[in-house]
Length: 223
Picture 1 (cartoon, rainbow, N blue to C red):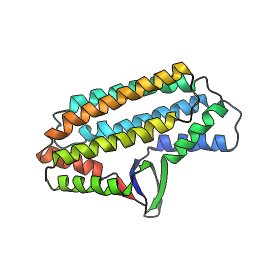
Picture 2: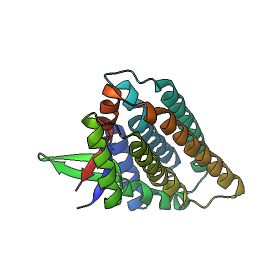
Picture 3: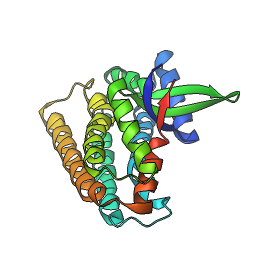
Picture 4: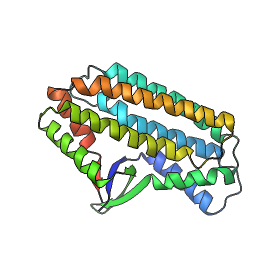
């Protein structure tokens, strides 16, 4: 069994991703920049929505730190959308091809109840998966372990950043300016994640804690 953090992909992202991957597989000669930018921006938006915005939008109890989360989410979307457009708009298909492999690796298709379902995912080490799942399950019961939950969220945030950002950038051959842009963007996101976790998690209690832990526990998947 493999341990994943995985959440459902939208139909728009699934369909555009499959079209892009098929185009590269068949060696399409027409430029893929426009489609690739669309896929990358949809991907970024859905990651941000699932990791941050839906957490406060769908909660039964308004989070006291909702404004912090929404500001951080807006910063990420603005930063990443700009980077995507700047980096991909002038690249050739051959230059973008390695990045298509990363997109394929972030997809997971499972058959459940006879229906294929597409997910966005990354693999988690089994020991951390068990630790993270345990503290989330305790939180669902209303048991408050703030230090452990914060430690797990900071580790999880770093894993998500590596999987969804760093691994996407690494295959690209960037010049000095491109590398600087991605470094600055990555540093801003790491700083924002740290700030959001440290302002949100220690204050979670009662229904807010239950909502938070229930939300993230729903994306823990073994397959």
